[in-house]
Image (cartoon, rainbow, N blue to C red; front, side, top):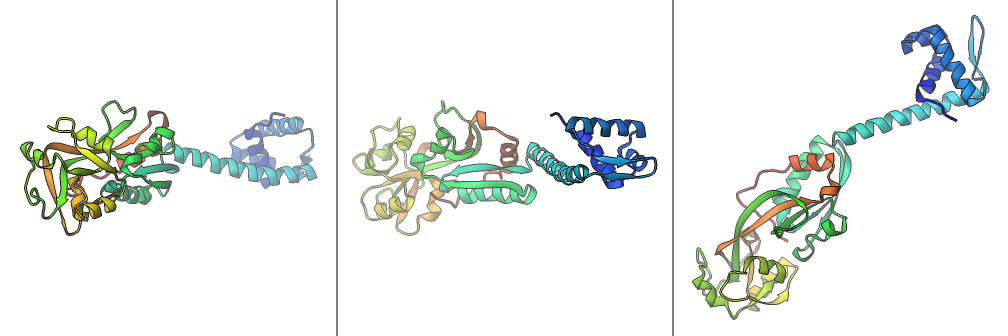
Length: 294
């Protein structure tokens, strides 16, 4: 059975007015055209919907039932159309956001606040990821967007640059490098035999041109754990300068000559939507300092 929406709309107006002339005026139709539509609807349904004579129009029992159901159906249709239009404008939808902690205060939270202010129909799932697993959600499709650091050049995702900052040697306060403005290439010899507490794959992207291969003895996903072990002289670490404001006492962050870290927001090309554009357009400019941490 093929019942067109326009026929249901016309019937709903006739059922409200119980007067063909007034209903035709509301629908901007001629009265004969409206009568043909109602007869067509009755034929398609296979039941009489109206009892009419030259003076009155009344609903049959079938007509009363269809009037109730058509009103609900048409209202649902209008809501659905509005939701689809809203999704097309990026006003409603859902995004799963993966992030490393160093992006939270500078980028994730300000962006969410802006989006919620202007697009309250957008909802979010936030997933806190360690450096070790920062791209896991992009790889398996659970993250629509992810805030990640230092992606390799051949990474298969689209990205938007957020910030670039120095990378620092993290040493105890009593270390020979502590307090220096810069650790030069010649200074690196000082830590050649020192164990590093970090992520080996991330270290490899930054230390390939060092005069030695850093000895990464513990793969750490927790920045708090790294700070505690460095303070206790179990090794040193290597991380972006923005983590310095969370190191508390007992540590020194020394920028390493020629090393920097880049934070981007990344997404899969096959998952792009209008909601992505709304989120990306709300990203704030890079701050002068980065007070967040993983």
